[in-house]
Image 1 (spheres, one colour):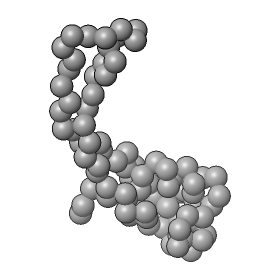
Image 2 (cartoon, rainbow, N blue to C red):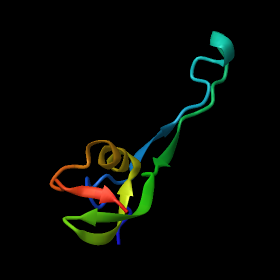
Image 3 (spheres, rainbow, N blue to C red):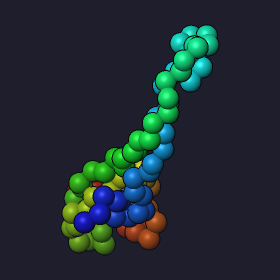
Image 4 (cartoon, one colour):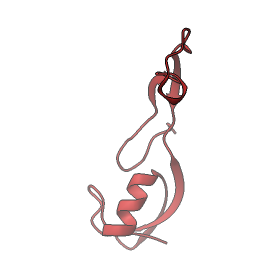
Length: 83
């Protein structure tokens, strides 16, 4: 199984780490830390959900989990709840 949300399909994102871009406390440094490639991982949670009166175990991201708790619906799932 891929490391992705089963509802929205959110996956890992690649970017660059950057420490002290403008220096500490706004002052300039002569030599700044170089940018290195890094991986931003998705915050997946293993949750038991009740989808249309059927219990399912799903790996979903926290943003989808917040939407489910608040609106009781997300994307194509109209009647969904956390068990």
